[in-house]
Image (cartoon, each protein chain N blue to C red):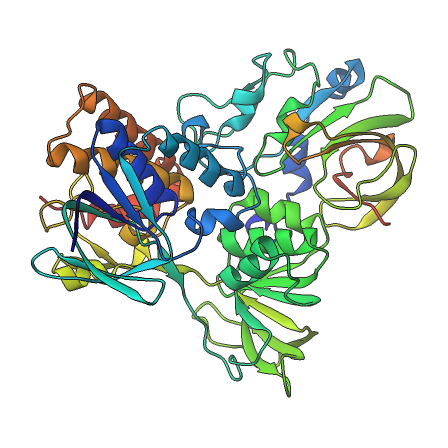
Length: 162
Length: 361
């Protein structure tokens, strides 16, 4: 189905997520790269050897979550915008999620925006905690949102309105 | 008559890299390009590129021409550029005729040539496909990303290959509503990371669908689409109507290389390379000696491969006319390995199958 719709199945998503114990320890990258394409900037971007593509740049990136600091450098480097960072260490009922967001208007800190799932459906409202857009991100801002924990495996996008 | 050592026809990704590679080896190069600005299609590609560092992966396409032109600047005394100049013919004696700014028509002779003329967009036939509001994806990108003009307000994207997916995303970035993306194939053709990032914006992707007809008086008002069976025959009763003022046709590209046919290169129709392409050896030299090809004119692929082909063809063309640098083998092997790497995955399978049929000599 994924190849017909662009929507990964729940099983595919779960395979990309580290264990809930790891998520609860602190920020960690989730790399939703499901199909082999010739591409390896995620590996190049990572300073901690937490993402490996290897010799064959078509290989699917492998995440070594024990090395990942959740720094989110890879988020703005992935040409497919396929990476997000999740952090379950901040609260029992909320998670923090960092996503790349290349649309205007950029949300502002503290703003409540629509939280969307992988179909673009509005599933919950989320609070914007931080918006980072330094020059090194090369016009791919990274937005940190606070989301109800029950949407951990569903949240993937936001819609920011003027 | 102008005489040069190496003529590069086309200043897109492949041509710029060919010129750079040849100049680096010491050859004097003339780049001819029909547009005002160098860079070819790169100047519209606001997204980040795939590939690896050597092919400027993760860099936005729009920023790559400047990187290459700055590099070319280091060889200022070796590189000449004529823009707004179209190579209109290439004759049996090797003479190229060029029309510059539609007024200056001149002959060009050279010791070697790299043809890097790119590709053109395929069309799609359906009733009223000539209504204003029905664009090729390239035109939409030119309007939006070069001139800052919105092509319309509500778009139906036809084609879920990489271009269709990327242009849909760029339309949304420009604040244009994309109603849906359709494709006659049963699967999404483009990279699925692109498909996913559009899908999570809420845009449906409809595979096994085609355009039945366009409706409108002065310009496009509605698009009627329908499902197709596995043989691409429309299924009656499955019609859907979209209120759109733009239909963006993105059904693939085909190599643009009539100059090579005219010159007498052996050409073959290779579906995997999207059309008629020249037979060439591993140096990208065609069956006509000292005539090289690179980029989409050799077979439609990603720009990353076009750039590496350009580097390879430029290196080999320069070597052929006496500029063989000490590190020739090292550079050549590097380019060949980069191409191998880019094509070694599932996405490159059909490309390799196509190239296997045109590798001569």
